Length: 144
Image 1 (tube, helix red, strand yellow):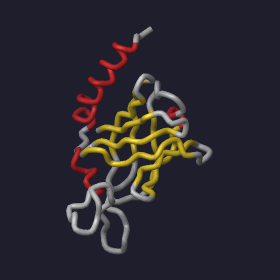
Image 2: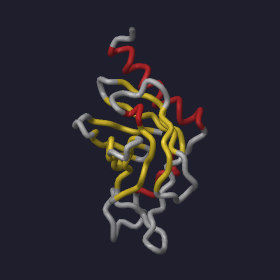
Image 3: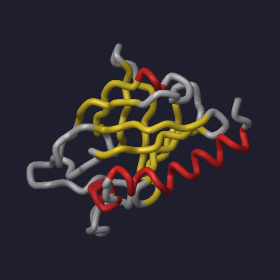
C-alpha cells in the first residue's frame, strides 16, 4: 500500500512527465483566456465569430484530488469542440472513475458521469491548469 507521501510524489511526477509523454501542448488551452483583456476577464473564454468558445482541451490530463490521489484522463474532441467524451484511467479518486463526458459551459469545463450527473466544474487557474470543486466539496485540479 502506498502512503500519502508516496502518493503525492507519484502525482507530482505525473504532473511533470505525462504532458510531455502524451505530446500535448499547454498552449492548446489558451481558448479559456482571452488575449483581449479590454472586454473579458482573464477567466472568460475567448470566442470565435458567432459566439462559440475557442477551446481545445483534447489531450491527456492529470486529475488530482488532494489527499485522495490522481489519475490520467483523456479528453477527446476536435479543435474548437465544446463537448466530448472523457476516458479515465484506472485509480481515479472519488467518483471520477465514472467520468464519461466533458462540456464547456458558462466559462467552465464540466465533467459528468454516465447518468449525466455533474462530477466537477473546473475553471482556468493558470495556463494548462484547471481547478474546481467536486459535488462533495473536494478540491479537484486538471493539469496537462
